[in-house]
Image 1 (cartoon, helix red, strand yellow):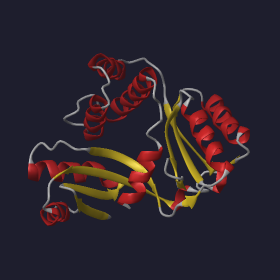
Image 2 (image 1 turned 60 degrees about the horizontal axis):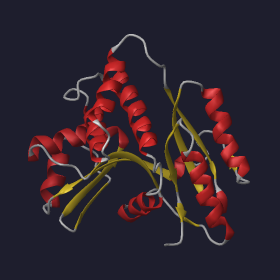
Image 3 (image 1 turned 90 degrees about the vertical axis):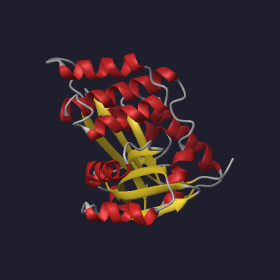
Image 4 (image 1 turned 180 degrees about the vertical axis):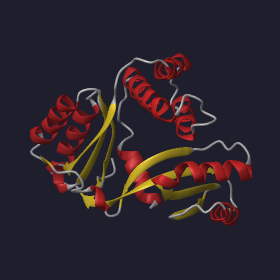
Length: 241
């Protein structure tokens, strides 16, 4: 599971290079997270993790605070999540997560990315059953048994745990995110998580070769140029550059 996660992270390293795009994505996600779960990071662990991740990606404090302030107000945009699934170039499975204030526009934009690269958008659930929706928490440490025992004592359903290069990585169902993070911080104090995310990890990978490689890169670039797209998950095994 760890390798699949790292491969996806590597393949997405070129995503959203422009700082303004990164700021916009984080601002929108923080706004929705704070709006739905509360604006206090101490009481909203998902928000706290999101803020920590934004800071690591060098998102300015004023961008974060503005998003939280907007969430605390009565008005503001009405963003809602939207998820699209299908098969990209090379028949690789793709999940596109969006936050949108106009679902019709967003669906049209995402569908165009599929059709312009000769791919087909699918119905909800058409590929997501082939991905694990995981909470991933990674932090410095070497005693995976202590971490596992802590999580089990907290009744966290751990999917997998890895100990490599002085880093412990915990994989759990996405619904266990808050409970897992709380259990680890209660046991080990304030941890500096290297990874603190909820991701879709593919259960299998699909090799993408030949002309499909360039087409897949174009497909990803088109999706990530859309303002409403927050994350793209796929199972493509692309050649190392």
